[in-house]
Image (cartoon, rainbow, N blue to C red; front, side, top):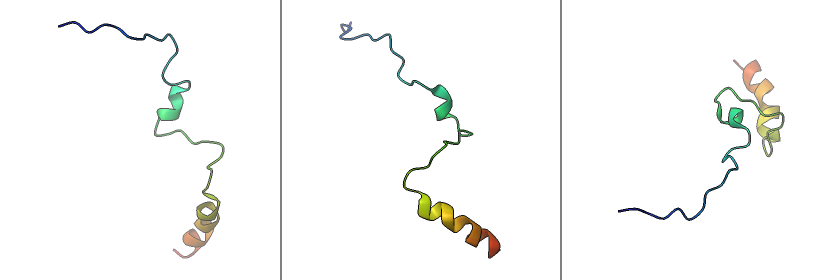
Length: 46
């Protein structure tokens, strides 16, 4: 049974494949300001 090809795109699914890497660190973490500010207090309490 063959299925017709409905749409073929030349555009890649991902523009930046490196973003999928577990080592990727974005320049900005939206909606994480509170957690980022809490890190030094958590580390100091160790």
